[in-house]
Image (cartoon, rainbow, N blue to C red; front, side):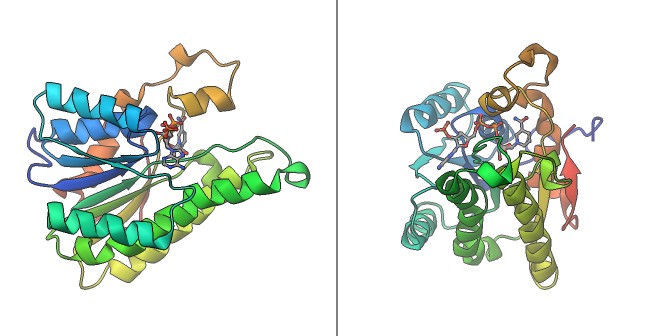
Length: 246
Ligand SMILES: NC(=O)c1ccc[n+]([C@@H]2O[C@H](COP(=O)([O-])OP(=O)(O)OC[C@H]3O[C@@H](n4cnc5c(N)ncnc54)[C@H](OP(=O)(O)O)[C@@H]3O)[C@@H](O)[C@H]2O)c1
């Protein structure tokens, strides 16, 4: 992947939805997808952050993005169908989703894990991607080449003490990815894969590892090749795979 050279117009004419687009890896993904030609729908819970990303994309001269404020913690199934209706009205197509928004929750033993926090982490990290994907599939089917990317983690591939609801949600994410890929492999042009970003310099990483020197970590911008590869047509035929961005 390190020697992958995406064409400058890799994502031209594609409509791509990024969740958690206001910060960290989501922000870098949104900017990068726009740089390669995509019209990006910036979904997130903090409008001020989404507006900043919007401005960056616009000032860079990339295709004009759109902002869709949505709190995945409290969103109802109807909020997702409303979102899809808006996408259909505004764009008439959807070619990709990057499920990136995530909550770390607490690092705590299962025995003492706060129960409400457990529900919140599961809601944002796995129920929301399920609801969003379920609602968007009709629109994605209309695309001649669509990509769904889920965001996993090392602790979603091998369990580790104290990672609680976060790790469980990432295991479930890998499961959802595999099931969906298997369901869509025949008679659709939708591929479904997951990315483990690996240790990356973001607020979430700093919250999980407060004693770590962030300068030893890759920035979100430095891990974008895998995201570009999976979002663009070069990964046509690749589905059901769990990839590492580092
Ligand atoms: N950084 C790493 O080392 C690492 C490693 C493995 C996996 N990951 C995964 O990579 C993804 C991105 O993480 P990151 O490191 O970039 O974290 P981050 O900087 O904390 O960004 C997370 C994003 O998710 C959004 N979000 C959280 N709760 C939300 C909600 N209820 N509704 C809508 N949006 C919500 C946040 O919005 P606000 O900014 O508005 O709060 C933020 O934009 C996550 O899925 C994470 O699990 C990261």
